[in-house]
Image (tube, rainbow, N blue to C red; front, top):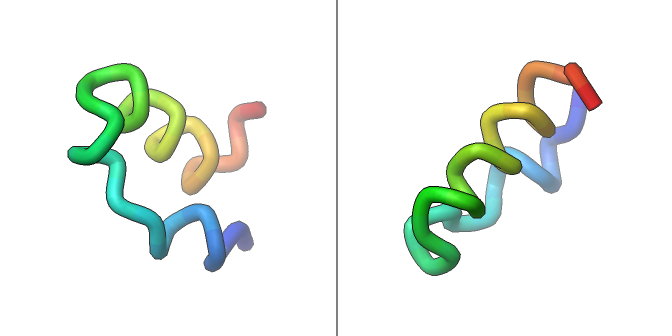
Length: 29
């Protein structure tokens, strides 16, 4: 699991950050 990745705040980066966060947390990278 990518706990560190799931703890940052994607809203600060907008939709791109959110997409990266979801991919990171789901492990599809």
